[in-house]
Image 1 (cartoon, rainbow, N blue to C red):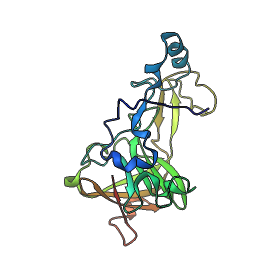
Image 2 (image 1 turned 90 degrees about the horizontal axis):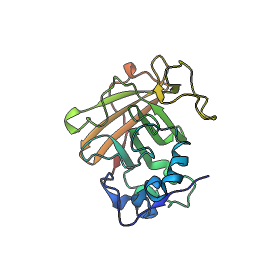
Image 3 (image 1 turned 45 degrees about the horizontal axis):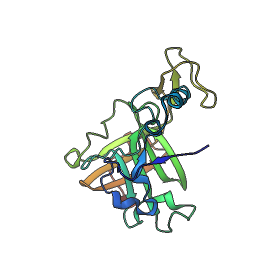
Image 4 (image 1 turned 120 degrees about the horizontal axis):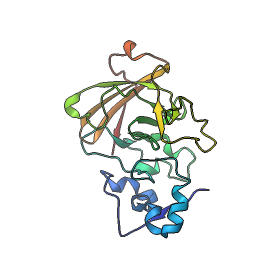
Length: 218
C-alpha cells in the first residue's frame, strides 16, 4: 500500500528550489500523516513503524543551500519531471540525491537515477566528509560506493528487510563491506554540482574528473 498526505497550507521548507517540482506540484506539500489522525489511530500506526527517531515519518526535503546534501537534477533535464515528463518511464534518470538514510538518518546514501543504465543506491562511509558540510570551499570530494545492511538493536543480527524487525532500532552498517565504485563530487557554485561515477573502481585509483562528468542543479 502506498499513501501520502498533502497540506497545501504548509509547504516544505527544505527544498532549495521548489520550482523544480512543478511536474508534481503536490510534492512540496507532503505532510506527516501522524499529524492528521486521532490519537488512537496514531498509536496503531506507530506500532508498525520501524524508524525510531524523530520525525517518526521521516522527511523528503534535505536540501541545504550551498551544501552537497539533498536532491539534484541533471542540468537541462527539466527538474523532477525529466526531459520526457513524469509519464516517461525513465523520467528519474536525471535525478541525484545525497541524503540521510530513511530509517537510520545518521548514515548517508547516494541515490543515482542512472547508474550503469539503471537506478541504484549506495551508502558512504561514516568517516567520509559529511555531505551537510561539503561546500564550494571544500573542493573535490571522493566517496566509496558501498552496500549496507541493518543491524537489529544490539543483537548482532542483520534484518532480512522483509519481516518486521525483532528488535529496534535498526542501524545502518557498512564497515568492512566491499566498495562497488567511487563517485566524485564538486560544488562549482552553491547551486551547481559536478559529478562523475566510476563503477567498479577504487577511489584510490581515481584522482580527477574526466570529460564524462555531468553537471547538476537544484
